[in-house]
Length: 127
Image (cartoon, helix red, strand yellow):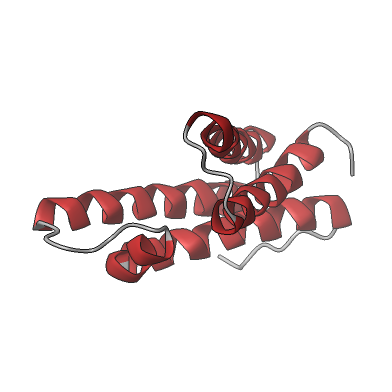
């Protein structure tokens, strides 16, 4: 079995966005403490179950990014784009509901929008 890398530019954009999603998930999976600090959580007495929850979330992002890469089907690209877009929508709500309009939150929002745009633009034919 050989590694598949798309030949068309539009699918390459979606592929790279999914690969970045998987790498971010891997970082969350392997380094939950630093990721929590980066996400503005104060690390005090975090129980093993707390780290387990963060690692589980990272594993989901790994799966979300790897699945479209392995299977190269439009539906999987679309699922990744929709999940990332919903995450961005959650941050957008946080801007207003939680007074979360901070530079860090804005940076993560933009990252999620860019990562969601690649797969969604590919699936819906915009690129």
